[in-house]
Amino acid sequence: TVKLSFDFPFYGHLVRNITVATGGFLYTGEYVHSWLAATQYIAPLMANFDTSISNHSFIKYVDNGTSFTVEWEKVKLQDDATSGDFTFQVTLHSNGDIVFVYQNVPVIIENILDRHHPVKVGLSDAYIIDRTIFFVRHKTIYEYHRVNFEKQDIKNWTVIYISALRTCLDEKNCSDCLTQLSGFKCYWCPHANRCSNGLDRLRQDWLTRGCDTSALDTSEQCPAIEEINKSVNAGHTRSPQQVIVKPSQHVEMETRRSSLHCCHHSHVSKQ
Image: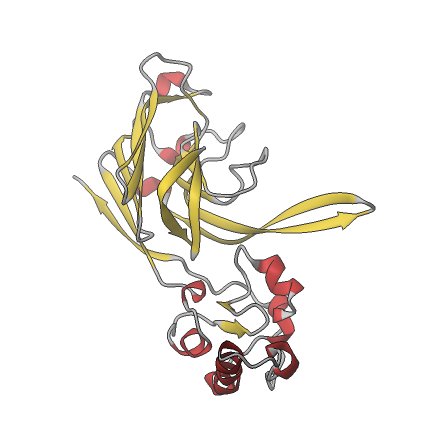
């Protein structure tokens, strides 16, 4: 695991710790477990690579303060070492943009075996729900969004540039939350003082605070909330929880699919 010198925004969450995996991907989750390849990954080319097969295989990384680059250099597939050497990179920029670069792809990616290890190109994020059942603590991981790229399009010197979009989590007040992002369905939760679509890494806190039933969904509901916050900040002793303006319609977040789209991307292939 590598600690970045900058905050990397991933699906609106600021990430500092990145786990570099031999299998051609970065793990962005906080909870390290045995199924890292399942979700919460940034994968330029996730496959069953093994650096111990060759003395010429390396995984290198560099952090220049505004970007973090990892290169898998001349790595071989454990199940098919004779297929050749793979060399590719991923770069994380401090503004959230991600770049995949493929220098050498000796075989068609769709033909790589996935019997012992997933083969993926893309991004994924998830939230974790922590429960205690019969005095035993359980963590359940729920993937809420994934971006997959067409494997057949990736050849030597292909570049995929993923541009990060603004998310609900970036909005810090009620009005902006409900008016600024036309491509997202955002909700403002007064109890959490947070903007969200309800499906992100803070999902458990969203549910614990009752945001799934009390979140505001129209900007007309904001002024009363903002006046309350101003009064509290000015030194009034009345608690904002005692005078929360309830939304006119409950928002059942459990039944909604995620509307979060983290990015748009461009795909460039060198002929």
